[in-house]
Length: 138
Image (cartoon, rainbow, N blue to C red; front, side, top):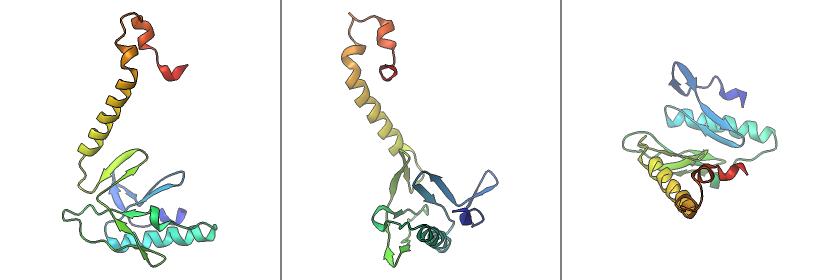
């Protein structure tokens, strides 16, 4: 994967970024579909050298262009699905760059978590100190 380091990506804070990696989760970033296909080809080749195979069913393409143009990208001659949003490390990334979906998802999760704890948090027979304790710390 070191072969990706010098490949054109996008500039962020004056640095070239062509990929984000955490464990087996990878995001490839390019200015255009040609560069993206080149990046993917490098990843595919390096993976094959290590005896790994990219799963085209778990790999998606997203375009940040205003009109979301058709972006035909392939793994082993299999065209990848183009999507308008995906989740990376628990965060929703959308093609429009807006955060409203992410905020809505996190607000909904907070509501679910509150409902799970509601009986404890609103019980007047339980001291405030006990209610403030982190349940995951036990």
